[in-house]
Image (cartoon, rainbow, N blue to C red; front, side):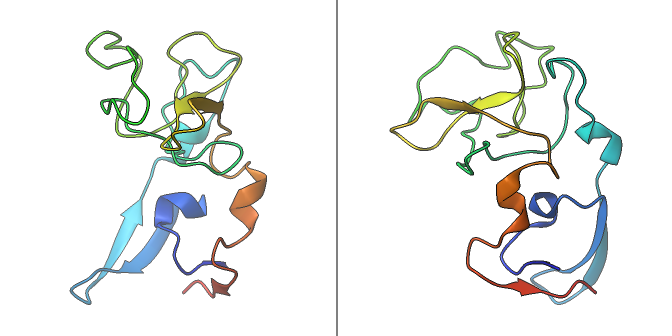
Length: 129
């Protein structure tokens, strides 16, 4: 089962069959090895976009609501793409700035290991094909 409003990446699976907006079925695949997290996660290149508390990560290139200097231009080898959790600063684990104006940043867990991932935010799930 998975939440009906989750994207494939949020589901934590390594592959899925999905219906695109035009009604065509397609196969989507992500590299499951990218979700490996060793040490403090400085080499993590996975697809987690939510913090441990479930907050959405802010894009590394965005400067709102959190203004910061942690950008791909300044840290080109840190993998700062989209709003994926990373550890470009040597923190204890992966983290991100949040889109919540009241919470600057939070730690993340790799996909498939966050407690909130087992529940549907809208309260229901649908059967996988």
